[in-house]
Amino acid sequence: MPEDKNRAIAAALLPLVGGAGNLTSIAHCMTRLRLGIQDRSLVQDEALKALPAVMGVVEDDTYQIVLGPGTVARVTPEFQRLVAQSRDTPPAPEAEAAAPTPTTAPAGAPPAPALAPAPPTTAGAPASNAPAPATTTADDLAAQGAALKARQKSRNATPVKLFLRRIANIFVPLIPALIGCGIIAGINGLLTNLGQLPSVVPALAAMASGFMSLIAVFVGYNTAKEFGGTPILGGAVAAVIVFPGVTHITAFGQHLSPGQGGVLGALAAALLAVQVEKRCRKAVPEALDVLVTPTVTVLVTGLVTLFGLMFVAGEVATAIGTGANWLLAHGGAFAGLVLGGLFLPLVMLGLHQALIPLHTTLIEQQGYTVLLPILAMAGAGQVGAAIAVYLRLPHNHSIRRTIKSALPAGFLGVGEPLIYGVSLPLGRPFLTACLGGAAGGAFVGLFNQLGDAVGSTAIGPSGWALFPLVKGNQPLATTLVVYALGLAVGYLVGFLATYFFGLSQQRRTELNAAVDSRPVPTTPATPATPAPATPAAAAPVPATTGSPTAPGAPSAPGAPHGVKAPAQDR
Image (cartoon, rainbow, N blue to C red; front, side, top):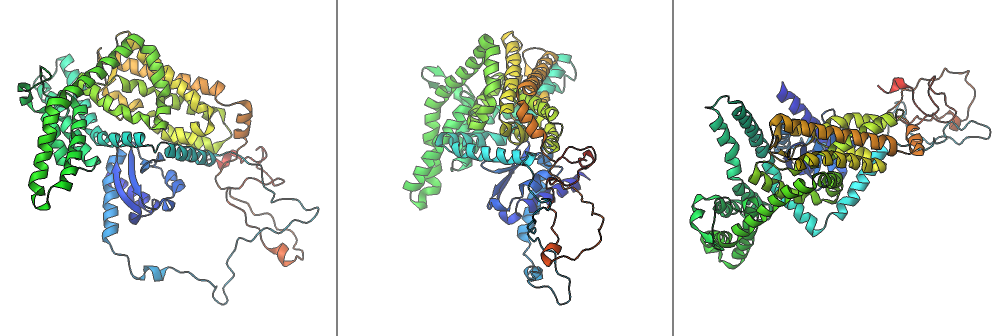
């Protein structure tokens, strides 16, 4: 049953992240299980990556396990239940005593095998244990990627970028509703164009528009929660923005309209409410706090919102919509090239989070954001680059396995496993992947300039997962074809740029000399006639799992020196 499968995945994950006691928070987004980790050393990264259900792991402000869209929403509740059960169940008192920690072997028992150092080789003896030349495997690339990410994370811990991350945390919980309502809006538009089910169309319109008409309230609630205020007070002041009665209020010589300022106004109002509330908590006596603080918070913030923030935020939101449309209408191809090519560096710098309020504002104004499909081309460039690396390294089975396991997630728009596991550690393939994203972005931007706008009714998904959310100013089939061709251009240019320029001849030679990192079953040698040996010489030298073939050791027939036989790569 599906429940059993999801429970099994959760049960496999829990011990590998250090158990329930090592978790401080559990949440999920579209594709990832996000965990707050208390002791990072208890997390077993490689074991997690080896699980079939895990597409990759990403370490940011939380430890993120990429499970993919759909799967993560089903596994997370099971994971939370297991954590709750583990915390509610007291540890067995005899568990610690039952763990055997013998220091000496029982009398008469054979001695336990120990990893003894290899005996020194004598003059003239073959150096069968000499170290093999250093090689590059997927584990090496993963380590380099993790180091790069850690360095970039420390650089991103600036006040501005941390603030942008908190802004992103406000909108991420809204993504499932945006996606659901966006797909319903697409279905409703399709039925309307076909003239089918006229009695159902109004109901679908209500479902699709209901959330968007109140999104300001949810933004206000999440903003207050994120910045340390009372969430419901943040929602209350944001509700003023969508109240129909604001049409009777005049600000700056103009009548207000419901929803004016949108999510930007709600964000500003809730931030102000948090500050007012905190000051009231400090100044108001405890006996009066429950009455005075909420009243003053809503009153002061509400007045500022009605007679200032709504108008100002409305002007800013209008400018954003006008600017985005003008940019793509007049410089579509160039604008798409810049946005598609620079999006991945923006992600690395942590600046992409500033785009989330812009996307939401455009969706609120126009019904879709024209920026997201262009930015999605960056992921297409990564996929094309990864396929090129796969073909260029036919003998590096370790890196090829990493690419093969990460490609499905890459096609669905989850690019971190490919970025931090392949292209970024290799260096030049990351740049050629950005070229692919620039080409795809330029293609989509060009069609925007020609009048065929391609947008998305929600934020979050990318790649193939964005198809159900694609919307524009032309018939749906035309918009889908333009988006699909943009992905194809991104794949193709990313592939060609990486295939011909991503890896130098010397680099390909080095990487193709890398051995498979999986253990090789050893065949015991035919015992020779025993000869007297000293105790040191008689001590067996243990073979290390997954070590390269030592110089002078026999290789599999037909295999290059230091490379395992293809039969081992199954």
